[in-house]
Amino acid sequence: TKNIGKIEPEFIRSFQFENKLLPLTWVVVRIDGCHFHRFSDVHEFEKPNDEQALKLMNSCAVAVLEEFEDIHFAYGVSDEYSFVLKKESELYKRQSSKKKSAITSFFTSTYVLQWGEFFPHKELKYPPSFDGRAVCYPTYNILLDYLAWRQVDCHINNQYNTCFWMLVKSGKTKTQSQDYLKGTQTREKNELLSRQFGIEYNALPVIFRMGSSVFRRKEAENGVVSRKKLEGEVVVDHCNIIERCFWEEHPHILS
Ligand code: ATP
Ligand code: ATP
Ligand code: MG
Ligand code: MG
Ligand code: MG
Ligand code: MG
Image (cartoon, rainbow, N blue to C red; front, side, top):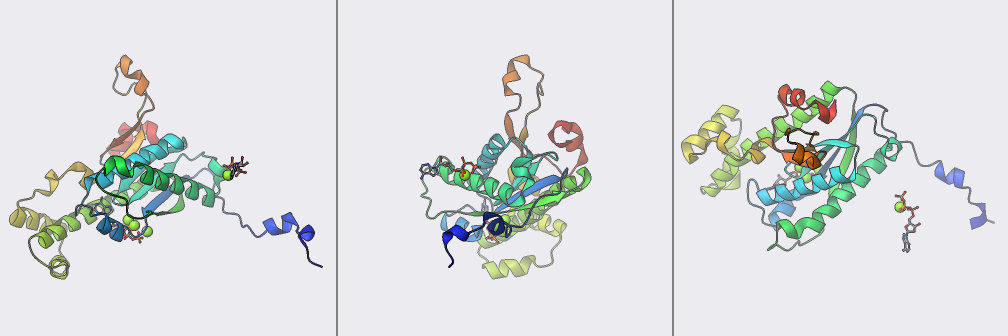
């Protein structure tokens, strides 16, 4: 007869398949808010960019870097964050599912825990969730291309959303605004903003245009001995990470 005594642990365990990330590659764990279109509606985020919501995301990313030493850099925009682990990381023996689930759940619980600090007058109406994926990038150049791709996405979306919400706020319906913007190029969108709305795109807050980068401060970066305690401190900046010079000026972060 079949009974509990006949369970063979080795056999049961054999159903778990290997999910090891390729050794000595940069692993990027990207988390993204689930259905944040709705979440941002329900919680009345300012459109196109709610600065407090972005600052909450950034604060969670700082907490993630403080928790996981192997994460050397993070880049965030909208409801997403990419976390870059150093090549040599042996976190969870490079098991993909453990890495992404641990980082994603830590980020999510921090988001809930810190909600009230960033939105003291807004009740959190339901539990937010994030999904996570892990991807290996085999060379430094491809990794920088990945990060540049996310920042290009930030630019394109921010420009489109800024135009879209200005049109909506000026009285057009969402469909009319969409149709109006269909097929327009970057230059035309910038012209629309400046001609119709008096907005210079490049004068918009840098956090909206560049997204947010999170990394550890290099020792004695500011050259002041008394600041030495800041060494290794996790900081948030809104740098241009598309341009190579950022990486050349901050070689301690990833290379
Ligand atoms: P999915 O579950 O597939 O990710 P989603 O609704 O989260 O669906 P995304 O493509 O991830 O879709 O887009 C996130 C959406 O969340 C944006 O389109 C925007 O409407 C909203 N959002 C996120 N962050 C902010 C913010 N700081 N300010 C205003 N809106 C935001
Ligand atoms: P890992 O991060 O590797 O999972 P862990 O410390 O979580 O390490 P587990 O093997 O998952 O180790 O064991 C969970 C531990 O948490 C238990 O050994 C026990 O000490 C504690 N624990 C969990 N749930 C309870 C509970 N309901 N009551 C008392 N202790 C608990
Ligand atoms: Mg998604
Ligand atoms: Mg999302
Ligand atoms: Mg998203
Ligand atoms: Mg456990």
